[in-house]
Amino acid sequence: MSEVADRARSGDGPIPGFGFNPPAAPVSGLEVTDLAALHGRMRDGTLQHVHRVAFHTVTLITEGSGEHTVDFVTYPCRPGTLLWIRPGQVQRFGSPGALNGTHLLFTPAFPAHLVSTASLLDEWYGPVCWQLGTGRDYPAVSTLLSQLRAEFTRQPGTVSPEILQLLLATLLLHIDRLPRHGAHADPHAGGEIYAGFRAELERSYAGTRRAEDYAHRLGYSVKTLTRACLAATGQPVKQVIDARVALQAQRLLAHTDEPVAVIARRLGFSEATNFGKFFTRHTGTTPGDFRRAHQPPTARQRP
Picture: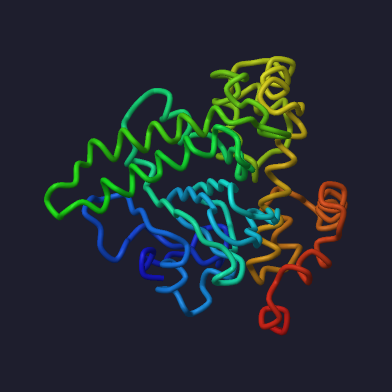
């Protein structure tokens, strides 16, 4: 994978992971390309298999129709679809040639260091997909991406990292103003309380699913955490905790060979049966059925 050739394994299991390493770039930490070029230099099928990356990607679809899968949710894509994939999320591209559009890759450290952009980059898995259609948001996003590409492709030695950083920050701030739905309704509404809770959740979801434990560690009451989560996501704190654990369970089931009992212990369940009930309640399927549906045939044939 030429622009992400540094391969690494996450502590979560053998999900292929890639670091940022574009084949040639005038600045460090950013690349502007398109999906056709990306597929053209990655002919080994890597993009069509589930993987995770250690950087952000923003893609505006301009041609074709197809699908893109992120964290086990498949998003239909057509001209006007905007995708933002964040570090650590698992994804899978659709068929090569089905879609084309501007594809922006950047490290978390690259955008201009503004308070507002820092909060966006720290946000725990915000919205992934928007359908911009033909409204005023499409030309605004398209223009900013075109300006980024124009600066990125200037003659060597004349590219300004500062202009690219500021243009990227402007793009991210504009995306942040796009309508949100569902669990990502308005993460800013929860304020510092929600931000602190999400950070603690990332550290501790495998150790405890008790809202009381998070409240104690953060110095708030459960009611305070619930209000912050309801404001940010529309869900109470316990549902937010359980959703994070269920997502990690899905990742481990789909992309590791670990027995279900081992995964259950890794996620803090004392009994595999309790884990099975939890997983079925939150995903609508059993761990075994989920694994069979999401692992490639070669993986399912392993002893």
